[in-house]
Length: 154
Image (cartoon, rainbow, N blue to C red; front, top):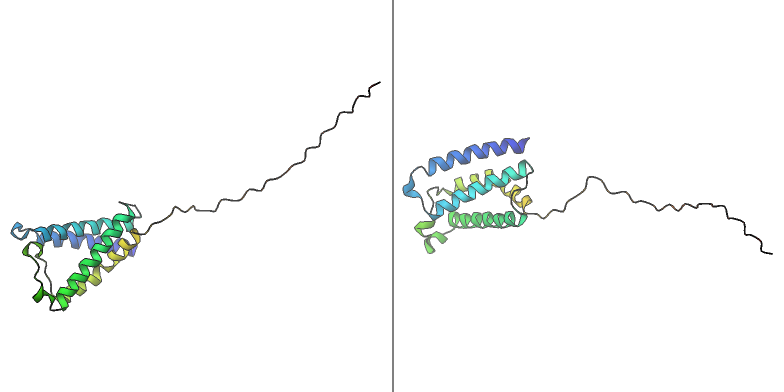
């Protein structure tokens, strides 16, 4: 039940955030498209995990998990190190949702259950049966037949 509550809270906040952020198309660029697709895929993955309905393959979710982790590592590097003075991000990749380091950490903490869910979606699972099949023993039955008496030949 807590996962479903979390799912609906995230769904509402994501839709509101995307609508309020991208209502002005002047800021729309490649970074914005990547952010929108990432948000949509995250919501789909969370839905798939919460309602146990497999959507897409585990390989897709594994790649998406690596994408999110890489994105988070780059965001932390740019927020907390002077690397942004050495390497500038091209304007096409800068989104209008650039945040302060504190907002970044709060956002990552809030969305870490999504990362957990996507990680689990990326695991290869084998189909498990509810019960183990019972081993059948071969029962040998001895059928007694009456042997016909042999005819005596003269």
